[in-house]
Image (cartoon, rainbow over all chains, first blue to last red; front, side):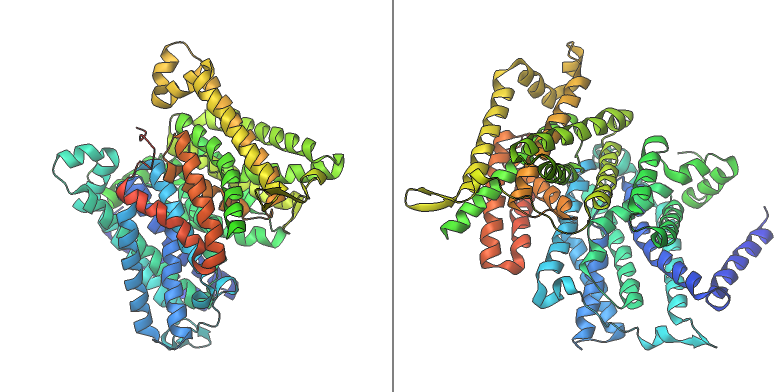
Length: 325
Length: 283
């Protein structure tokens, strides 16, 4: 493919994405918005899982931190839109830094168990500290800021466009990070932590930074989640949702963030279409996940990348065209 | 004050039964069995149905344990063996089993909180040194001491226990020396499942059973084995008591931060002694 066709495809893609709220039905737009902010969680997960090989169950905890910070600040009239988001992201970074210190020394299953516990801590605080977080009744009535209510003709498109821009920026940034020397160092840690230590890299600091980046991405998802739904409830950040992020990302394939996005799209589409039929769609999703874990550990993208052309694209995106390891 | 102490001890005893199986299977198989909480709840629900059909609490206790042991056997034999060798994938398999079982339980037993009624014998109170203690608490404490004793004997006084302890340290070597380590793995996993089911029936009478309870119990079990140290029997005992007492005193004095308080000792241990209070650290 030459440069010309490539540019044409990219432009077409962007135009389609921009036009979605104008031409597609409300249902489809809502679905795409949901897929996008949940995909941000999946990206946060896949960044750690793909680069460092660490499976984190604390991803929704950061969504909770940013969502609850915004909810509490705005419903009590302490801070309003641009500043509340800044405060929320700052809070995410602080909590991410503290959690990062806890989990820094662990690897493999130990990391998974620790993040499970950390996620449960956040959930417990949110559920039990009722005088501050409203507990199990949740915070309701968080309004979208005016800029997100911006209209184009009849339809409200502000939220969609802001989310889209953030989403694309984060995807590009994560792709750039995985190609950068930072990303390569993380991959080195994944392969052998002791060797990287011996080579003189500050392993602890690199892992900590990666954890913070993942926390930041998940925090962004929280901002969009809370503005879109207007509700912050403990049940949206419990262990089930952590498991959902994990399942979706691994289902799609964590060695590429495209896989994580694909996985989240499939799982969310499944969830929305199956939840009309039955409340117990988790059985089906769980079984699918079980099959993927046993028979295709690299996820759907792992299957797709077996194709030669797709493999070359993967090399191009993740290694900047360099084929050798 | 005294009642809180007894409640804490009772919960600690219950948590000990759950955590000790988890800890042993974890240290031997190196699989963090995330389905352990689901096993606990499964045992409880089976016990409830059995009680309704057969009318005997004691029979329900045994059958609940056995059914859960069978579920654990299926998980180990048909699923975990397929991915043996990759700890992370094994753990993820248990996670998906947990999700599937949890959802199936909602289908079968519904989403409303349920509780198993106490048997007649265990209703009421006993007087012990001028203190009134619910009979049920005494029963749970006695059971957990009995189970703890049996497991201790199994680990330290039998040939089987020798194999298990050796396997915790170096299962490849044990396998080379002519033991069928896969069978030991299955046995340990099934034993852990049996204990979880047993604890499920006992806990289903003492606490409530509802969806979500499985994750809660799993979290407590994880807290205990991280606090006490992976693979340490004594560590599980001590950690279960710490967690149980914090739980009951926290719920009386600082209900808003009760769960948070339970996590604090774990966080402190992680910072100052990452292997746990009594753990030797596993490779």
